[in-house]
Image (cartoon, rainbow, N blue to C red; front, side, top):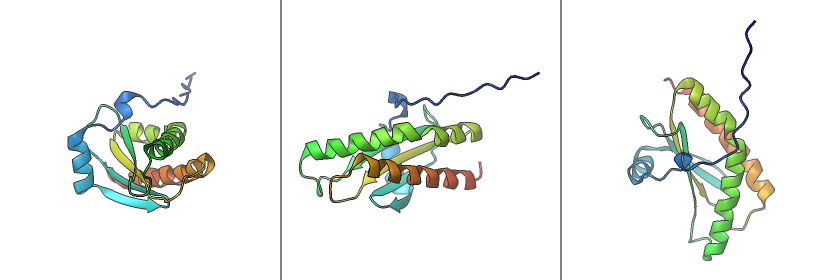
Length: 137
């Protein structure tokens, strides 16, 4: 009798999951593909290898939000929504042996509520999952 191992969701956002490599970020903006779902613009690329199967970075335009306090608040909301929902995307990448670097940019012009960010992030991550499944290994 085989016992299936239950994988418990890991709701963390560890340093190796953060996109910090300047080379990879430059490559992302040069060669990456993008998708938009208001108020987010997502740029993604499949690098050859990374420390983690899924790396993400977040940004908010200082053109739309002059105060750093507001930009930091929006980034904090985005990271939290991402952290709680990345599990299925990360599992899919692990199973397929793929890597993904994602840069999420907030393009809205007003401060969002957490509920809005959470709902929109859900849609964005599901779209990324579908895109990754369609790409051959």
